[in-house]
Length: 236
Image (cartoon, rainbow, N blue to C red; front, side):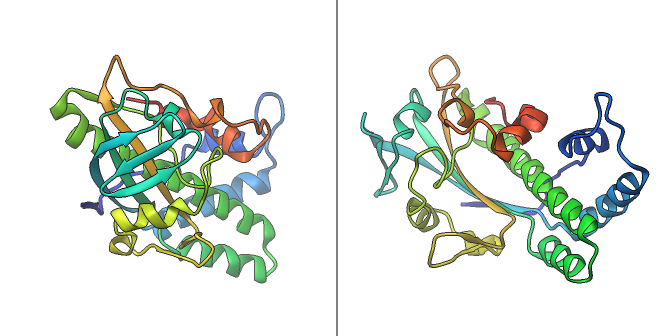
């Protein structure tokens, strides 16, 4: 298992403005832009991106979605598609800590709802960037030496994959090593955390499917975020 305390992320102003529906003829109000700049700097100061991952060989992968890794069983309808052509799997956990979410709550309780909403959104984008940074580490350290490429990341609770497998994932990669634990309902604490399964295999064999291609929700925030920032998550 490897731990990274040097994950990087960026918060490009133009992309963040677009996330809130401005641009393309709809000018952002001055108050919003001022709040965005202040919350952007605050987010950079509060976020504490950390990540960990462990790599396992795929012992067995069945067409019904059952996958055996490290002596544990994962079961999800999408897994046979996601891991098609993969020979190994990297299980990862990334977080930015709890300071951003706590400050956003403080701002809301103090009546500054705009600042709270903007900071919370920036925290989510920070997590996207930190996750992409860890994927870069996995690519350079695990895929390149083997001549492999990576699939897109998927996690329990996503795209018809039962969230209960979160417990199995945490048994194979220690979330507590980066300050992440599971609640009884399998949700991660801190909230700004994400777990992923990433396939590794020959470049001409691995699946290039993305989460949105196997999900029937067309209007979710994740799809919009992928449209704006998805290049960082394309299979490498």
